[in-house]
Picture 1 (tube, protein in one colour):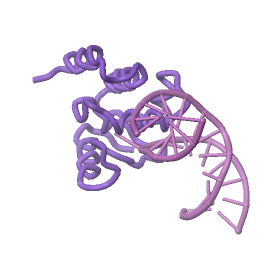
Picture 2: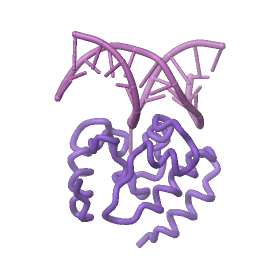
Picture 3: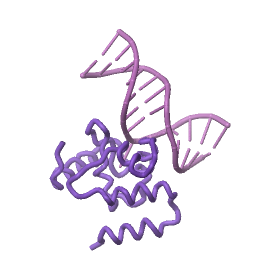
Length: 105
DNA sequence: TGAATAATGGCCT
DNA sequence: AGGCCATTATTCA
């Protein structure tokens, strides 16, 4: 099975992504299981004030769903998107995954 | 409450 | 250079 360390190495060795994206994905791997983070908070952690930039990076996430992009939620608690989909069955799965990890608002 | 809008920054064309 | 984006805070009715 792939450990988080494997994923991290894959992120670090990827040349086709930008520095900014690397920071986003690595910080995301730092989010512990059962905990969620908002786009704005994640942006703040990597030294960026634009939550939209983070959202864009996640939307184009080449590591989904290996990188736990389901732990990223909007400030109001909505799910916004998952695996490049802003709506659809994937969103429901995202909700389910979060609940399975023991996350609740 | 909810709709509209400005702020904001990285990235794609 | 211009515009898009899986945001967010603010403003107004």
